[in-house]
Length: 117
Image 1 (tube, rainbow, N blue to C red):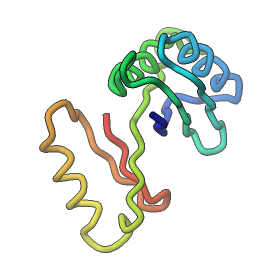
Image 2 (image 1 turned 90 degrees about the horizontal axis):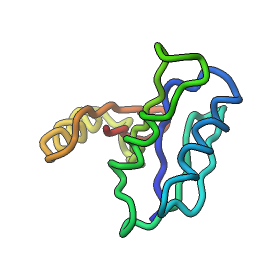
Image 3 (image 1 turned 45 degrees about the horizontal axis):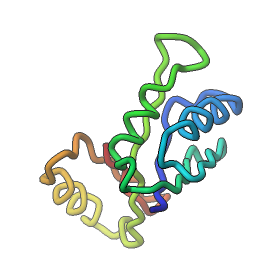
């Protein structure tokens, strides 16, 4: 499976290496690339060995370079080409929020995506 995560808490370019190294060490992860400019992590993994939610948890559990008070988080980024159309963001957020296991849903119309945690 290939998935894109929006990574929050990236305060400097070296943070990307910290998150990459943490994720690379997870059994089932085949590849990971964190982009400092976009804040996206593209991860290829074996879903039989690790679930998407577990990857998000691993990102959140990664010790931050700046110390204990700082945290990383990984939001699964879902591409929604028509998200910028009026009302589509609200409809998509409402539908996703009803699903079991979804904590928070945020819309990013400029990136044409929805982030879920």
